[in-house]
Image 1 (cartoon, one colour):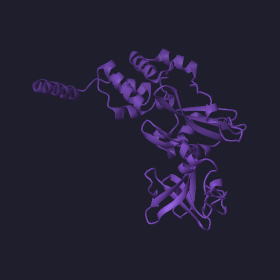
Image 2: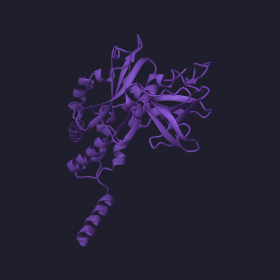
Image 3: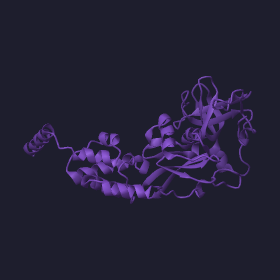
Image 4: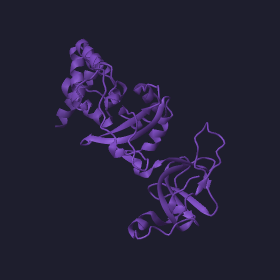
Length: 315
């Protein structure tokens, strides 16, 4: 059974007979209406997440002596094909399944916008929780450096299990786009909780990049001059002291905006063009240095000469 107090405790039900697949929150009970709405206020298509709004006979009048909160949460919507309807905005994000049931996705206040992408943290947590050996997890957005938002996954391992970051990233990348894969992972003995048993996100510790210092020192000793130049640019852009030869840019906390900054720095440092699409394909110091070490082909040089000549003529 699912439902908030504001709609008389429970509003949807589903008989659970199969625990091998995700458990939905079912369908509305009698004399109850549910609507899944996009931020625009229009009904969300099947399979697309939106805020769950509940109407019907179980709807409360509002909050006692809290007219401001009542006006915020109990609203009248003019829905297509329905007309003016008073509902309670639950703040929960759900989506309709093809058979009419609803699936809980997460909380609206846990929906964030990072670097232009709207992200539902609960969706990441749902996928990560299915990874083998994880007992509990939570994903949070941190901005420890002003202007640099990063997704951080906090993980509690099952007793006796060892959490492997790369394996977890692989699990996430199978089902989620790159911008939804956390930049950093941090293993905790237990998640901090509020007095009522919910995760206390404000108490989550600041993450620290955990790196193999010995491996990084060995990498540094083996680097070619070009690789050292690229690694120095990485340290500057990522604001970190250690950069391994084969470490992944995104796994060290990089993201698309930082990649653009790296592109500009590399083109300035080497005096060569480096298309952004290639940076997405070459995400290690070794691969990027190899690209920068490749002599510019005659055709490429000719095209640039022509472009410069055309510019001078236009000038």
